[in-house]
Figure (tube, rainbow, N blue to C red):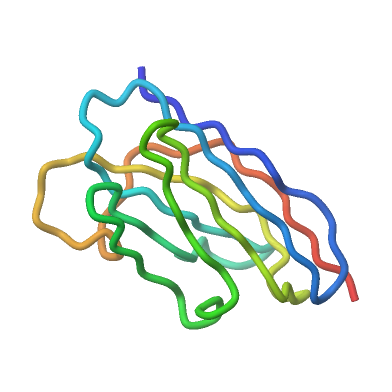
Length: 125
């Protein structure tokens, strides 16, 4: 049974930092794509950052590039999202996602099959 469990959300002032964590369990193979998505009220869910766990290739949305960093700890099978210089427009529910389908599609363009429950991030001015 594949499971993704997020933690680390909260409220922070503009310019502050937060780190989100997502522990993956139940995966047979170490190589997969993992990512962070977010959804603000009234908006569609959008990709924030993704990483291929084998090799560490990453990709970011333009809106967070240079401020957010995604990383993965292979031993713990945990993906992190370090968020710095937070802005009010970063306020959203952040979801962890993973996909292990053996297809030659970049992590950024994949359809993700497994999702966490979401964690709220609120940035106030």
